[in-house]
Length: 461
Image 1 (spheres, helix red, strand yellow):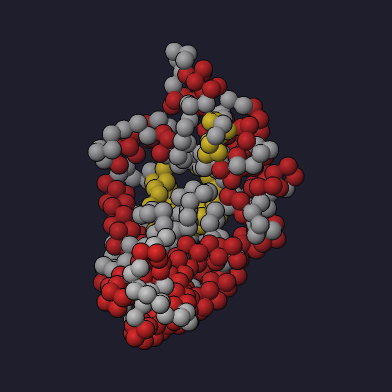
Image 2 (image 1 turned 30 degrees about the vertical axis):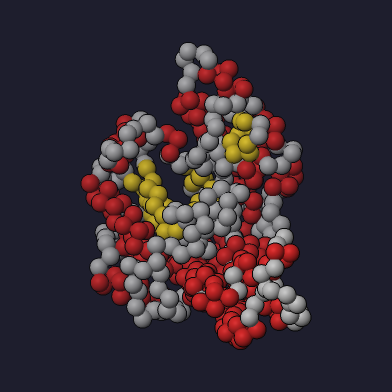
């Protein structure tokens, strides 16, 4: 490890609120995290944590068991990765407040995003959640309590009344709840320091430098700060391939900030890898697909930039012959855990929809002789079936084979519901278009020819 790395702690964020990996995959990928330069993990469990008692209903169908959490922590320790658990305690509370049992604790009755900070039961709820998390993470030096994107804060009836008092403000409302949660953690778990995201604490024009924001927090008593970058999950809610060059620039900028800010203020950096924008959004880039981006970013942080030597190191770690960061991602195979998923998802993302669209919208036989008008009325010149059907069958066959391989690879890494969701969002729509075309061709091929002109008005719906 580089002794001159500006960030002493380099944590990989595992966002488990979407497509959580099986423990078996984590056992394969943790050694690579360490080799690339990570020395910690920020694990955002959300509904994958095995809550007990009155919180048991928060568990997802495939939530980790207590023994699996213990195994994850054991694997992390073996690979010298310090674990910081993350539990949302203010915003992003959909996985809690969507349940009828806790809906009365919403800030705004119709929106499950944000917790009502005025209810004593709200603090008791998040206190119980943090206690259960730390019970399975004994000795954790830090606990991340979230508190980002607290949307609609101040719009609840209790908050509206509270804000009418002259001395009160949105900032005070936010800070009072953050302070209450942090105080609970410190009182019940004295050896654990709370961490929070900072977006709700900012009150500075966006065109001013990040360094000034760091200085402001320092003057307010935050003696140790953490940076947060992203290696995936930050460029579009339905993004499937990380734009590596974009994420590299993000980390290059953080290196510049670390070099120009006050010394020893930055405790470390968290490389976030969001899997959903919120509990209800679609999946963005899967973890195996984000590994090349993570490798580029971690190695750049470790060595102070992305030189040709660093590029060669990354290629060696990933087992790829050439890494072209100018592209969305390389299509070449690699040898890292999940490289088969990376390669197959790349093929699907770059070529499936476009190949089907090309057939349906730019093939002259389809557009000229089997348009939507023809398909609706089951009309076609018989010879055109010979021009269209073989190409459509060939295309469907090629993609069916690839998708079968992808589904098998995904099933080894992810749980069934995540596999189904990803395929439904990114594969099946285009496959259904192909199947629909072939079905229409089959039907028109086996029906008797029209007894009158093909464009008889009686055929209109």
